[in-house]
Length: 514
Image (cartoon, rainbow, N blue to C red; front, top):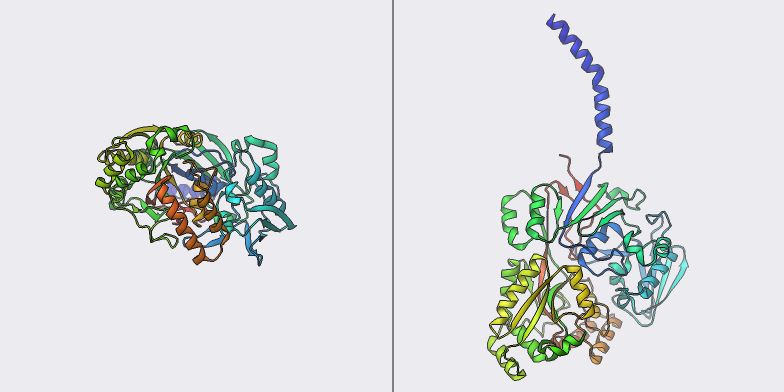
C-alpha cells in the first residue's frame, strides 16, 4: 500500500511540475526590478535649463541624455551626438546626431530638437545655462541628423559644456505645451521616464522601452529618496531599504570597509568645497566688514587650517586646495599655492581694517557635512577674533537666499565640470547666474573672456594664472578642499563606475539574483 501511495504521489507531482515551473517563470518575468537610491538632498527643478544642484544632476543621469558625456579619465565621449568638428576659425561647431532616438513622448530626436533646446537654454527666463552657451549666436539645421552652432567668437569650453545640463535635450513638444510647468512632468530621452515626484519624499521613474541603448538598462524602475542625514541614509542601506547611497559620511567609511558587507566607490571630485562671501550681491555686502573689506576676507582665510578641516570634517576623504580646481589638476596655478594658517597675520589684518572682532552669519545647508564644516570654521575663526554665527537652512531654500543676496557668507560646494571654465565663469564673471558673491571686475571679466576664446592649452593656462591672481586676491570664494565622492552600495549591485563628476550612471548597472 505505501508503495502504491508513493507511485500515485510521484505521478501527481510529475503532472503538476511543468505548470509550477511555468508559473514560476512567468512570475520571474513579470517581477519588476527596482533600484532604490538614497540622496543627500531633494533636487531643485527637474528642468535642465533651470536646474543648479548636484543632486539634480544625479537624477538627470537617468532621465535626460546629453549630447556628450565624459568617462573615468574625463575624455569626452558620444551620447546623443556621435561626433563633432570645429571650423578652421573656431567659430562654428558641427555635430552629427545619433539616429533612431525618441523622446519619452514618442517624438523624434533630430537637429530641429537640438536647435530648440539650445535656444531654450539661452532664452528661457531664469535659465542657468545662459552663461554656459553665451557665445552661441545661432543654431543651423544642416540636415535632420546634422546641426551647426555658430559662435560670436571661438569658445574652447563648448563641447565640455555639452557634457552637462547645457547638452541635455528635452522634448520640444512637451516643453512648449507645459511652459514654465515643465519641471513638474519632465520629458527627455534618457533611459528612464518620469512617473511621479513627492517633494522631500521620493521621485519615481520607469524604464523607457524605446531607449536607444536599452540593452544596457537592467532595472524596471528607479526610486530616488532624499535623506539629509548621512547616518540615517546609511541606516536605510543597512536595513535593505536602499540599494545604494550617495555622499556617505567620511567618518563612516573606515567601519564600512572593515565590515565587508557593502562596497565603497570613491574618486576625487572635479569641483570644490568653499565659502562664498557676499561682496556685492546685495546691500548686505556693504553692511558687513567681511563683504566690504578684502583685508577682512584675507584674515578670515588665514584663520582657517585647511588640512585640519579636511581631517575633522572629511576624515581625510578630501584634498586641500585654494582654487577652483585641485592641486593635482593640470589647470591648477602652481604659482599661487595653498596658504598656511597664520593667526598672527590674521589679527594684524583685522587691526589694520579697524575691526578686531568682526561678526558675520554663515549660511549652511542642513546636510551633515555642511553642518560639521560650519562648526569647525566657527571655532577656527574665533581664534583670530571672528564671531561667526551659523544659520542652518534647507538646501534649496539656501540657494534661493543666495540668489537674492540674502546672506553674508555661505557654505557652498560645486560639483565641478571637466573644463575649468565650468568652475569659474558662472561664479566670477559679472552678473552670471551662479555669481552669488556678486563679484564683478572689468579686467577679470576681460581675462575670463580671453580664456574662453583661446584654444591652445598652454596659452589658456597663462590666462588662467592672471585670472587667479586677481580673483584669489579679492576672495569672493574661499576655496577649502576637494572632496572624495563616496558611494556605498549593496555587493549585489554591479556595474558602478567612478567618474570624477560623481554621478550615478545607470547604464550597465545590474542587481545580482538573490
